[in-house]
Length: 222
Image (cartoon, rainbow, N blue to C red):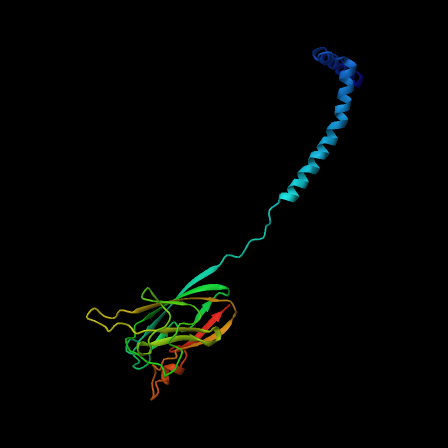
């Protein structure tokens, strides 16, 4: 169909539309069609701009807050007789690695039923740097006469006094369970030490007390 024929067909359609519009005329319909053709692109541009503005203003922040991290670690205190090295109690493992900015729940199972009272005036019988439970009961200190070991980290101001295990019965050894909760924020390598004189020699401060892997070790925060 020629361009002229198409134009004639459009004219006829406009006339037919005019007949169905109350009070309308073919000329009026053509005028409205032309005005609509000019208005529609303008409306589309306006809608696009409004949509872009709404999208930019209501877009939620993509930043995410860091969730608190809690880690659970455990150590076991074994007697010298248990490891076939009399007089040499041992923390196992002796070294721990912890994530920076975390809450640490450290559980210590003590199978040593012996005591090693601290020297007079010592503060290592008090809980420092966190909270402690012994067999599920909260404590803030352990009586000096009932001290078996300590887990002391001077660089982190931590001290965990540990009472002895019950005397072994017919059914074997039962540990005393100490749970200590604390936070670590500064990265670094820290030395821990048992401050109770549970080693060899006249003062009890020899042997395992100065040997890494027994009554001293490291705490790595990274």
